[in-house]
Image 1 (cartoon, rainbow, N blue to C red):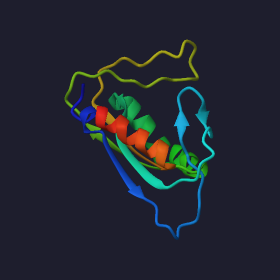
Image 2: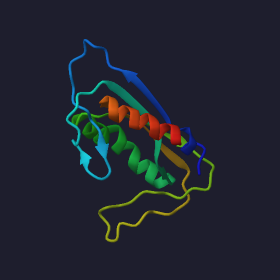
Image 3: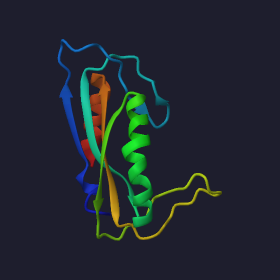
Length: 137
């Protein structure tokens, strides 16, 4: 495990009472997004390692993150930032080329960790669940 995998960091802040009401942005692996009809009451920010990359795939992913993916994430209502950090650990590249048949991971030695900050607006129940998940790691 790389040194950044253990650096997951979750921050939860209560929304101001005078802020415009927004729906909960909870995303469930089982049900997907949009499964909660409750209003958001908290901002939950979570830094985590999204994937590990070799040098070639770092060069491919960086512009996508800076332009296309970042804009896409913001367009659908999520805020996201990223940092690509050098690692010396024994990790393999997680990059998958979905244009190639078989969708196999690269598997070469990774020299970088793609570290993301995701921010979502959550209702009290899902903010508590996010906090509980963060405490388990």
